[in-house]
Length: 409
Image (cartoon, rainbow, N blue to C red):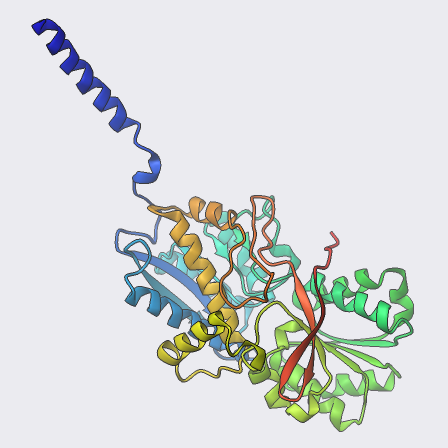
């Protein structure tokens, strides 16, 4: 009998050892460079100066949100160390700053670098290094290519999809339109151009009667607008960032040109674009959106909007609430926090991309009702729906159904 008890004890010890060895990997802490028991280093580049400085508030509101999270205890006990540098909307400067983040600051990820040209310049480097280029602040279609660029993921709807929605609207509501297009001469502008032409299909050659591209180094785009008006177009497709979009709005008014004015969503901020252009000059402009607008009184009693307002009042009080960038940055920051929460104690770069590609019906707070974030290992487009809107008075009024635009290869 004694022998049995001894054998049982030995067996129990052996079983305990096996059980301990079989403890799930999730309970073991795994870190890559930039993560520790107390810290998660997140790198970022933003155009705090230069021709796209109107987007600078995005980086500031993201920093404010991470400060809030840190004050509340961080993520699984770790504080976010958000390191953000000015790249002046210059691709060479972006490369320099991202190398500094990766090789000098040793960040875990590069989050929300802004601008299509800048992200294009850093994409190869980050993918070669195996550093996540996560939720980039640009809607170019190329950010959803997990097969060739597994470390890069977008966040907003693609420019091509958005442009196809405008094309569909024209075909249905103004099939005899004569369209003049102004676009930024880079991958961002050309992505919108491709989507718009794809959306018009075989009607594009007849409907588009004039195109003008501008360089970000130009101080003004007035001459381009003058030439487009002289084409006789009755539709103006304004594909520009806030500074240049505002210039175009003012010039259209000065010329007494009265086309149907369609403007890309990246310039849709009331605070950053329409107020500088003059609200009286912005009446009737058509654009698209996927998020709530702080200038729209219909959201005043929405719990998520109230939460955002309270956050802004406490953590970013000097910011302009009419600037849509402050809602955008808040939503993207919340998406990153969700991904980091899902990572648990496995803060490897591979697991961050795995969790980013495993978002299911996530609602960051102030997206339009019915629009949710979904990703998968083969779908790196988190948001794929938009709704048209028209500017009236001091705010945007949405109209029509929530739509998605199919993307052409």
